Length: 165
Ligand SMILES: Nc1nc2c([nH]c(=O)n2[C@H]2C[C@H](O)[C@@H](COP(=O)(O)OP(=O)(O)OP(=O)(O)O)O2)c(=O)[nH]1
Image (cartoon, rainbow, N blue to C red; front, side, top):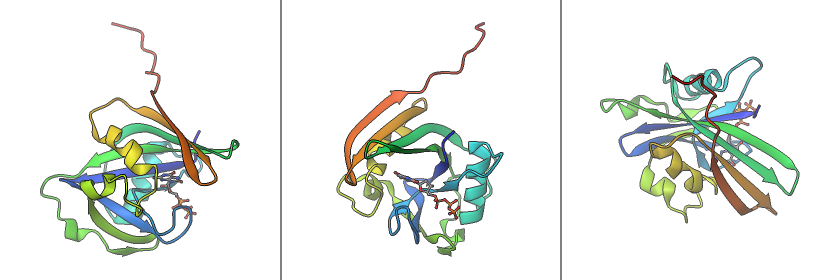
C-alpha cells in the first residue's frame, strides 16, 4: 500500500493546482491530494482530499495508476493518481483561492507540461501526459540521486484476473 494520493481536476484546457505552503514540494504547483487515512481506499481518500482542499464534491474519479519513487537507493514511496473531468459549464471562479494547504489556481495544460517549467514538481510533466491520454493505468517509477531524477521507467499495471467469458 502506498501512502499518498493525487488528483488532476481538469476543466477544458486547465487543471486546478495547489501551490503548497509546506513540504514536501513547498512552493510548487501540484495536483490536489494528500495522505491516506487508516481504513480508506485510495479513491475514498482522494475524494476526501478534493472536498477538503477545494470544496468540490465528486462521486468518483478515474484511476490513472501509481507514481512511485526511490530516493538515494533506499527511501521508497508512492501515490495513487486520479483524473477527474469537470463539466464544461463548471464555474472556475467558485473554487477558493486561499486554502489551509496553500493557494489554488487554474493552470493551463501547456504551462504545466512545459518540460522547462520550474514551478511544478520535476516529475509532473513526465508522467501527466500518459494520464491525460485514454490509456490504461500505468506504474511510473522515478529514481532520484542527490535530488535529481536519474531514471524513469513506466510499465502497464497488471490487469485484475477475470474468469473469462
Ligand atoms: N507530483 C508529485 N507529487 C508528489 C510527489 N511526492 C509526493 O508526495 N507528492 C504529492 C502526494 C500528495 O498529494 C502530496 C503530499 O501530501 P501531504 O504530505 O501534504 O499530505 P496531507 O495534505 O494529507 O498532509 P498532512 O496535513 O496529513 O501532513 O504531494 C512527487 O514526486 N511528485
